[in-house]
Image 1 (cartoon, rainbow, N blue to C red):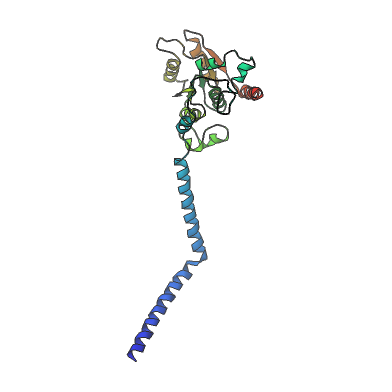
Image 2 (image 1 turned 90 degrees about the vertical axis):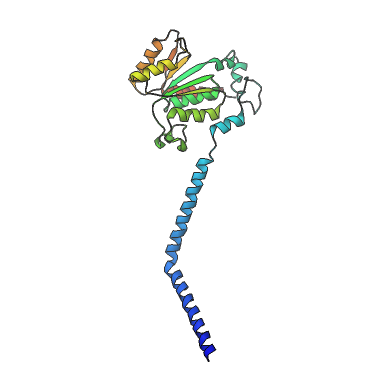
Length: 251
């Protein structure tokens, strides 16, 4: 009789434990389970986003993968990045296309116009490209510029150099973050476009700025150099025409 009572007691205890567990499951409810599942899914997505940002393709990796081209070739192959540009020479439009590597161009203002100009010059294989801007990349720039979301917070010139180096590692890129309309910025700008003896080291300055003061500053810097330096004030319409003309020439 005592054994029977002991067995009944254990059964009742187990029944109580099962009921308690069932009550806990019932108290969770479908809504709570779904909420926890959503939270876990959100955590998983955040981890994926972080992983994608960390493992994003770096320009240096792309540059190493493509490798630098020591001499431009007109050979028509899929692996030759200059084959279509060298076609301009075959068509008689330019005499010696490879001379573009001897050119140094300064682009002042890496905004809607300057970023396009810098990209086109880089793709064409210009020898050296100097870039000037005082601003930083914002997410608001993503609708019209070649910057990427993960570059938000970088200076525009550094972000541009990062992007352009992946497009064409043959181009020597120089990044200058400065406001050329200030006294110190103007002096730094003049120094950066000169060599050690004070002569201009740039062949052309593209003024891609959006205000009169900056344009006049660029003109003043150009006029003060000991050697000739061509200054061009570029507007968006001219960039679109250049892009259209380039597209028409591409085989």
